[in-house]
Image 1 (cartoon, chains in turn blue, cyan):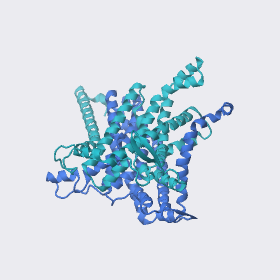
Image 2: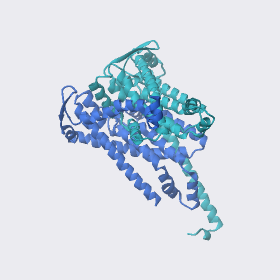
Image 3: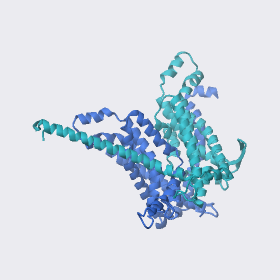
Image 4: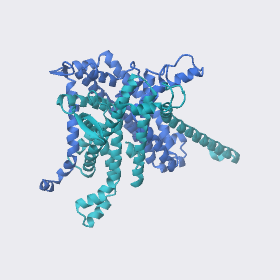
Length: 290
Length: 300
């Protein structure tokens, strides 16, 4: 064994990689391909499958019933990403422009919600938003500001709010990291050349922070599209997303091939969206260089 | 308009306006920052406050009590699920830290055929949504027939029955996170120290244990803490891979939320919050010990 590695040094990294590769091939890559394969099989009894090729599952994902949920999930994920970016960028900018000591504290203050359980953070909003017993509606009614409770819960608004709240730190941290790395002399050079504030921002700061924007957007968009916990808790059982439909196929309907097909299509949409986004951003970057 | 034609008075007026504008911008940015942090913290603080509410309501204050915490401590289901959570987190962190660190060394220190491919394999569990990974594992464990039988173990005097499938799943997503954090650390490391050790006739093992490993350690600890947190926090993958009857704390909390909202859930939430804060405290302690890495490293 020892001699084998002495004679073939190219095998050494594989020795180090072997445990990770084994674990991930058996418990990640293989299951991934099984899901892909299941998408094309016929449904058996009680969660089983019949080994017969069919395109029926994929066709059903385009049924208006399911396809509309797909579109809604996509809409919710895009709106969530948009709000995270619009709210998160100035926050990252704020942190990056503070003095170094303060910056450390502010980043730490961002890590605390980031490390706090997602389920708990979603539950916190449940206690605030519920229609008749939520803190916001109860307080507003007690103060006499409103007579009837506001529709804050069990709709897209509640889901988007919960997702924005949950994933905002994931947007802020990479943008902050990009702004922190930014060479301040470039900004000073632009100012010395009489560029206006907005010009300095759009021609210098924004293009240089794009890698952070891209990373943050991906970190928000992908889990938002595949959200399961947030719609399950804040959707009030009415407002569902694709993640809930998928879980229903496994936990309630026992239609695993169809659940697999939905999951396959979801991952394909994520891949496609990621590619399109990268293309759009890289063309933006090219424009900024001209 | 050219500046040359401006009188001195006009000029000072201009700079005054510019100064005022800058002050207003600064103030606006400060207010925005304050608002941003309020948004992040207010829901958690309200959650904390109502865990002490002397009523079943989590919206109207009725006075202070510790009843919900007492009830939580006497709830055997909650305590058992807490032990399950800790056990799964400890075991999966130990396994994934070793495997992930080895993988990080291979990826950072060597160039080989299949490097790009392994890069993709390692990143995929990070970017794939929980729900997709959860159902992948659910199907896999079902058809392979492995994993669902429980690991019967006595952990700090508590008898647990933890399905192997849950631990396998947690390790599967944690390897990648550990590998990313350790790789970031390796990439920052100064290679000249290792070269110096070799110049002084240290053997490869000696160089590794006396120089490389101590320098890697902050990254390994950072990766382990991240893995521990992710494991404690995971709900979706545990929920789908555990089979019936096994609860970790998040799975238990989800079940409680589905049944109805009570301040008892707030109390459990505070317990989980305290765990998270303790972990952040530990990670800060270790970061002070090693040299300063980017705080982002720990989170991403």
